[in-house]
Image (tube, rainbow, N blue to C red):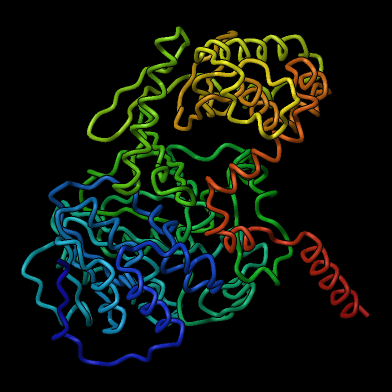
Length: 544
């Protein structure tokens, strides 16, 4: 079981009420499942320390299986468990005895964790480490000091704990991050436009150039920037300079803000201009920086990671050169990887074109395909492309009908939603990811991938509905939405299927658990417009 080491603690720290509550929740939930807590306690601190979504920061990261990891600033252990799943051993350190005890309690069943309470340099570690992690630590080591020297000195002191080929992982906000320019609160001054306007706080925000200057002063020879979006706290995507985001990333991203009152703009609408003008690396909201004395770094170039779903589907999709890998973020998600493999094989056997794949060591490998997804292809169409769009959608409909043998109408799992409706062909197994987002499309050919979800005895029309529904804005812009509804017999069933889909999404994305996150993501456009009007009024008053 996890071991707690208390003898190195020299000073006591105050414990807030919310910290006491978090510790209480950990005590009440030895299984590590905090769904009921997240569903009822709406405080950001509780969510931040207990939500599975935190695991996305390191759940994709490759390290040697025999690695020794030092986690500096483990807090209540939100990242400790996912590090322990990837390493041989984790030494988790926190300066607070209260938090260290809570972390050890949280991971009591893991035998490869030692939790230390105290200051790093007071603990005589007998070994050096393969990986050292510092999440939101570097900005706080010098109390907001403007000079870069104390931050470089602190990192230089860590070299004594790092193996010659070891890696340091730093996660922090970017002072020029787009969210701060849009009015988000500075985390250290608790003010909007904090350091951008010269206000100092409890910590120091760095730009990418300043981070590079610090690392060079330390003596690191190599470093690699990763750009977590919307930030390092709750990542949904992670990019690098070798794989920057597409201009439409704002349409897929779910930015959030627990304190949106000061926002003047919604960052999602600005990413396209940012990316098209090559400004993204300098204005990403936060950084994850990998640095060391050798270039033996993680091969991942970009990551799409979903940790707001059912635990079995908390999966990271990673681009590594000419390969895409699907990795389980936690051990529970290994079942989700297995489901994808098991669903791809029947499609292949029934004559559909499936992207080649290999299941190995709990990961799914597939080659990088030089073709757009069908969803991207549709986004690029113009009204004059009506015939080619119809042909593509007809091919998809034919593929759906081919994907599984039919069963009698009486088995229809959706019939009770409208007993009198014409549901059409009922498939013995419907693969719910047979939608344009999960299809490569080139020269009229459909190649399916990423088929993780399925449903028995389901109408083929429901699968076609999902494809039309997910791309309704694009198809409406092309003037084809109503035509396609009628073409595939969806018009009379649209309302019923839409309600069913919204219920399915709510269940899959666990809205009952993560509803607070989606509240934070629903930044009010009217409030932002009001804030802009206020600024305009203030500016006009000053002119007078």
